[in-house]
Image (cartoon, rainbow over all chains, first blue to last red):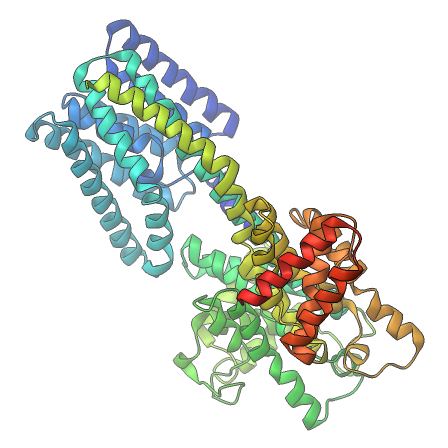
Length: 409
Length: 199
């Protein structure tokens, strides 16, 4: 599992319409609206068609972050009668551009609420371009509130999900406000050709989004490389960290973590053993039980791994997850002897997966860990159950077993 | 001014802004966004080889300031800074006993000495890595281009500062300045001196 592909993979699995057909449908609708609107001199329609095309060319994004959004605000502020049509178009946009199945109901609700709000608000407000700015800010606040409420209902940690969406929605704020105000003014003045002046701004928003996506992919590739660094030092870890990361994503989905949270968890799982890069391979590859001094040396890897990740970003939530992934529920773990709920949930999840993969030893060189040969999947599950409550979180073990069972079916 | 004129002005302004961001800020931001991960790489290598400790942050900052002194393009400065920070990642492939002073054979010293080449090979496998692989390969030997020379000089300066203090590092650079008959290297050494002095 490549965290960089996470969003795209989810999008592909969640899409109800294939990408090519989706694009064809969007352009067909946009083209129809454009032709009819241009023929009638309807600037609002031209603006909306432009927005739909801009959305399609840009990477998938939450509603408030889409290039079409400020255009739509401007249209609604200047032409109240378009509010109802706007709502219908956003419903269609939500269906076509849903990033994943989890997001689609939320996007639908946002679209319906916004469509009604535009119609009502547009009629209440005088057709003032400057008030388009106020309407845009109010709409962002409303969307943010809907996200928070949805996260709370689904039990997601809002810090992960809503923060990432709000960051996207509030990026390039002056550009977006400018689009909304200019659109409203142009629609009110009724000059169809002037709407083309919005092309550079809409294009800029899309280009900015593309660069952000590319930076995210670069970072994910570098994180993969960082985990790969361990494999140069300790080749026996080949595949282990990637398997743990892939399983962490599946376990996180089953435990109803939000998409951004799962992505962070997968990245942490990918790097959970990075601290071993500092360890002596002669100790790690010893064909015997370790001496107390050697064991102390190995135990350092949790703290070292946390320090390595912390060097990239001190505020990274993954730092404590990596530091505590060898704690035990009964407090007999390391490095901090945390117990029960003191241990971050994510650390408890990584602990279960890490132990399972270590026990089954899939892909390990057979000469490694000769003093503790690998076991089959059924025995590993038995061992997890036996240690549930003492070493592992019993709830996490139960959900993990359900994930394993699903994979076998 | 009516709305049509305002729209036209807005179009010109956003086009100009787009051009500026695409040619200047976004390429720099692409490298800058990786500084944190580069720092993580450098920390990992430092944990593995504590006796080989080079302050990667200081070296990277030295390269950045020297590059600015030389009026290199901002994207090049960002690239050099990244390369300086990540230059020793090849040490991860060198055996622990070799890195920590237990050389048992000449071949161990050769392996350790090949870490720039190993690091370059690692970076060749990464999407952005190819852009800095050659810099990493040359970070102890120096190279033909100004960029390669700068990264190599800065790395050497940083090591000497760690070992013997800033005065020794500057002495080194003065010697380089005197010995160099290549204006490019003279300029690079001067820029490093200026950057060290400011720091």
